[in-house]
Every structure is written in C-alpha cells, then in structure tokens.
Length: 262
Image 1 (tube, rainbow, N blue to C red):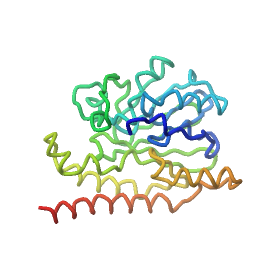
Image 2: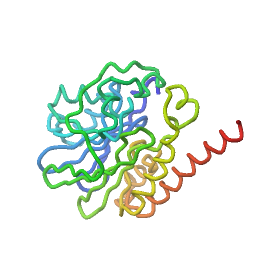
Image 3: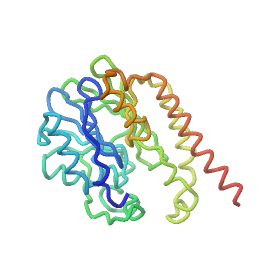
Image 4: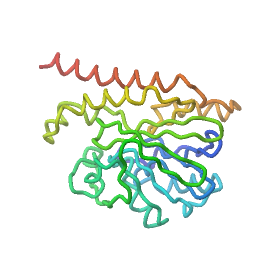
C-alpha cells in the first residue's frame, strides 16, 4: 500500500489487556502485561504516528513499550521497528531466519514491491527459535516456527484474562508465488514448509484469533459488533481452524494455477 496512513482505524480493546492499535494495511496489537507493554508488529514507518496515537487514545504511553514482537521480516510489519526502538528503548524480537531481512543484508523485506526503499534497518535484539517463550509481567508468549511466507515467520500463542490467544505470523502467498521465487533465486521448498507449519499449529487451542492483517480475522466486522455492544465479538474458538484451512487452500490454488499455465 503506497499510502498506508490512509488506513487509519480506531483503536479498541479486544479482550482484557489485549488491544488493537492499528492499522488497516498492517495490524499492530498491544498487550498490557502489568509490567510494561508488548507491541505485536510495528507496521509501516509511514503510519507509526497512527499507532502511537491509538496507544495514547487507549490511555497508554508508547514510552512504556518494552518489547516489539515481530511476526516476520516484511516491511509492513517491521518497517517502524527502528523508530520505535529509538523512541522507547524497547527490545526487538524476530525469528532468527529473518535476521538478514531486518538488518538489510538481503533485500527481501518486500519494501520494493510495496513502493518503498528499506532504509530503516536494525539488528534484532533477540532471535527467536521454535518453542521460545517471551515473558513480561503476567504474560508469557510462546513462539512457534511457521516459515514459508518468510523463512523466519513466527506465530504466537498466549493466555490472558481467561482466554487463549493465537496469531499466525504470515500467510500471504505473494512471497511464495513462482514469479517472486524465481526473481530472487529462492527455493520452492518454502511452500512445503508453509503447509507443514499450518499443521504444526493446528492443534493450538485458540479462543481469540488475532490477525496481523485485518482481513485475516474479520477484524473490522468484529470491531463493529464489539462497538455495538457484543463484548464477545472476538471470541470464536472455530475461527483458527477455518483460517488455517483457508490459508492452505489459497496456496494450493496458486500452485494449481501455475501448473495450468505451464
């Protein structure tokens, strides 16, 4: 999206200490751990002011962000990380295999495809592996490796206020399409890894599914229900499985289309 600031969306509390703080082009979620804030995905640098405005609107201070937990190394999810770190002193966490995306060693952040130049490179403070647990205050988040969209894509699972939360780190088929893989000399094995990753996290119990894009979990429609008085608008234990099924089907459709065109 070439003008991500146009994707403003009101911030809101999803459940307990978990809030949506923007934006439509790339979601960011805030978790109040009782001992500082965790920000799930940084978003675009061009719309960081909207994220900070959302955090303040909900009564929090961006300076209280202690951890920026990144799902993967694409520009729309980590682009604002360096600015957040310089503003807050927060530590950044990223899947180990995406380290070279973040620090600029390889040009695979998708910034070019989105119409930008990635000049906000940074060195992640903590490189995550499958099964790592990130703990701050009363919240412990378990990381699961779900590569494919990028090599280091991580999915996150945690409990808060009596609910089990889950977020898949990235399911877009854009970086698994033949044209992209051939352009950058990347292995088609990422597709197998992606499908394996979906099954790896299928058994995770998820009461509230968080999307790192609003379309993943019907965030805008659920927000409308929440605003209308449905306090449990985001509580949907079946949403996780439906999402994984849809993500699998999306990739298989791409593969089938490419096969027909060959």
